Length: 481
Image (cartoon, rainbow, N blue to C red):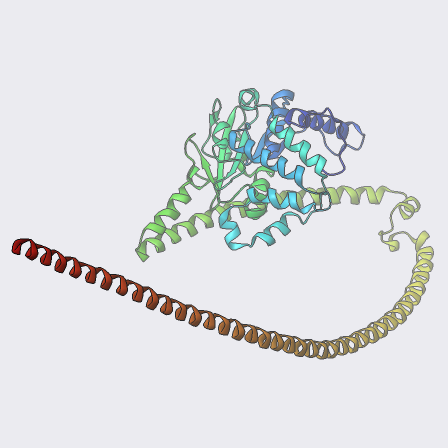
């Protein structure tokens, strides 16, 4: 929580937070106001890393009045994936400037929501909803929290010491605390297929899967609120439905350690794979029937609670009426202002005078309020007219300015186009002249080389003919001699 103070040598892990929770509950109990009583049965709710705090607190304190633990995406131990996430978060927080408190939240939010939720809701809207409640945690606090999370005490060996039931609610698409953590709360404990069986007490655990990511309080707000309301109001204290109907729509209770996919997930996959319209129709009818039975059972239970509350209120009202009749009228007039003055003649005259005085005051207040309201409406109308005039003038000025700026831009672009065409024309002419000159030089060089080669070949041929003639004449002369 923001504005929390802590020492530099404190390790903000689940052990530290469990000690703080214990002191807080003792302080709330002992302050004389009795806002919270540890001697009465209560539930402990933990979300994410808070589940590790709740389990450590329950295992160490061992309160007999703890009715159960409700863990939403609970962290049983720091696995490699969770550690890598918070190592990255710590590095990002160390690099983030103090002037940009939104960067840590933006980076951390990528691990909170499921792809299905982000496909229906944009990431910006999801982040705005997540940060609607202002909690300005400093960068120092965020870094210390990351370091404390990495030093969490492993709660898996402590689960056997918790004598209260555990309801583990987990998102199927959670990327921060993965779904296999839900199976850790079953090991060494009695696994129950329904919440009602788990809440019978003892070393019991019921696992509930929901479609969603880590932040189920935002993605499945109505479902989580309904589940918590049912647990707190005692709806699951009695097994009102068979085990297969003990969940509402996408809420499924698990009985096995390795059962990570619920019945409804399998049913949805079958619907997607199937191509028959009749199969989809039958599945829809079955789902609607189950939802109707669940809804009717919950409505009946709510009506029972309402009736009990009305009966209690009626008994209290009757008791107050008896006290009202036995009270002294003078003392009652001093203590309460909503009694019937006709029942007490001795204060009737005094109350009539007070009523007349209040009527005069109310009439004066009403006239003053009307005058103020009229003046305020006139002022608001004048202000609105002046704003409209200013807005119209500003719109006209903006249109003129945009026209001038547009024409200036057009002129500049036109000059740039003319200059670009001039430069291109000059460059193309220069390149053309260079190409023509190079071709002429190449042709002249080729002609010169060809002339030289032809002369060389002719001279060699002439010399060969002279040598043949000289050899023939010499041969002839030698033969003649």
